Length: 363
Image (tube, rainbow, N blue to C red; front, side):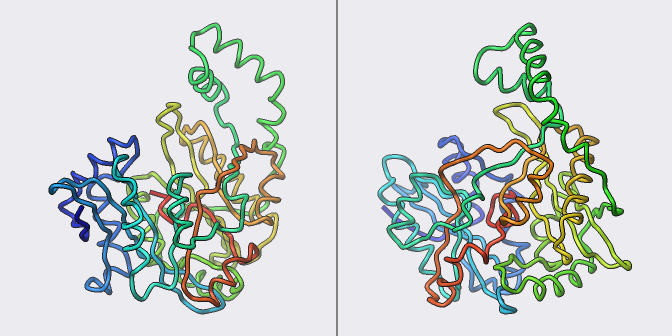
């Protein structure tokens, strides 16, 4: 069994391995751009490995990607790596340990994170001392139903078989018993003007400089123009994302980032809240952004509005509009750092405000 650094030319072999395991992978150009357009990689090309592959008789049987990222805490910047597209053929799973060992052996990395772990991969991570991200509510997703009939039909089809009579009857029953909860968000009114930004411009740099001071006690993904563009540029250009912005005195003071995704198994279209930040950090600012984003989701003909993560304060505010909550006992978000001081910090729940802006979930 041979292990080596991954190359961009390995894409088709990695894709074949991923699809064989019933997982998903980015399109080729997106896969390349995750690294080539990454701010850290652009400045340190010779000092960053994009991942590793396992080979058996020159055939790729395992892969782990390493995406560079940058966070701030207490006005200090930290460089990290994200596990991405980690997959190994079942009969070679014991060699997963070798891939993780290579991953955490990277130099000049302050921390490592994995946001799409599963119960099998977590066992391997724990061998190397990875810790569960302490904000356990990250795994409990919140939902606002935008198109009740579509959602009911899709879930009925998944559970049972689907026909017109069953669909209509189910929709009728749901409307009787859950209509008030489904439409509860409509009881709230926006009090501030919200606008849409179709690109990440220099206004976000000014916002980031203020945010990292205002929330210096949080472990925050770098939200400068450069790093946000890396995450969002392609999606914004393809109209698969938008940024809802609140401005005060012509300056950005709060924003929400939403990404449009397809739920292939259910044949549904959802809008996902991947980031929510505010310098004012008050209930009305967050509610205005959420209400605006929900309405935008309706305009875009989405079936669901999904919320993943966020700290306890934001979740309390989000729950004011009474979303449905799907709880999970398993959390996919784990981290590791060899910096003892940083490790003490990251073991505290209060320093985290996790969302899909973290890790590789947004892709």
